[in-house]
Length: 351
Image (cartoon, rainbow, N blue to C red; front, side, top):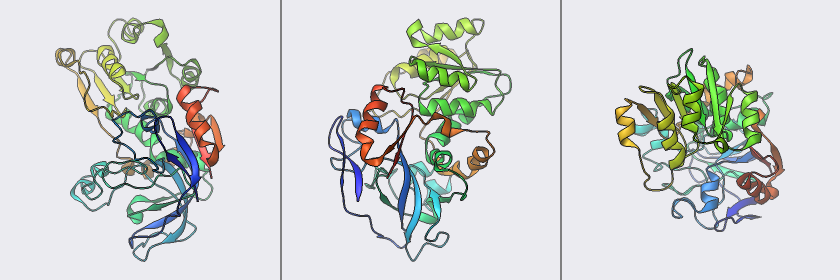
């Protein structure tokens, strides 16, 4: 089958790889109908994290959905032909952490991610087919009339954006600032609006992303115009936002988020940090009496809950899609997404 494989910094390739097969009784094999390039795929693409995230030759991608082609004898709730969405992290559903609703901390899989190298190495979803373990736990069925473009992001970035907004504890009338107007940040802005804020600000430097943020009801704050914390304080009467959502995963925006939020405010961070350490403005956070919530999203917990909100149009994830390419064109998709060329925001792939 054809798949996108990793071969070094800036080098992903479309090539033939062996077909996946059922290994355990609880496995399914999916025929992938849609996958996508995620911002955290770019960490691997850039070699961030000291090469710990992915092996040479590994199949890339953790955002995917598809149709069940084969099901193991232990699978009870799925049948051939079912359309399903799958979360980005691999979890068993049975261990202590899964039972505590922390599937991203799964002890059985070692916090594994499809297409990544935490814990057990699982093949990624930028391919024609994929083996999904613990299928009854991981797979959610998708209604027949729901387009892939609406369903796909439930498995990762929509759940992550919503989780970020939820963790911020947004209350009606609050002022919210979102650092990063990439795919996760844009969906965090959509999600934040569900909690009734009076104002939402979008902090970024890419003009076309800021314009889309405006369509989602956010007020743009351009990094090219100076210190974002100073701009946000000026726009809020000197106090700063009540809640800041950090959706980038780098030391600079994380520090800026803490500098920007009002005293007693909350910073919620879902950006993926792959370096082993970074600077932390502990003194400022301490004396501002801040609350901080951060961590990898437990997307398995959100998929079913958010699906009705998408069907009702209260969340519109498909609006961030800028490109839909054939799977074999993924190397170009990575390049334009990475370089922010051709007004790229979100690149979807079709086998």
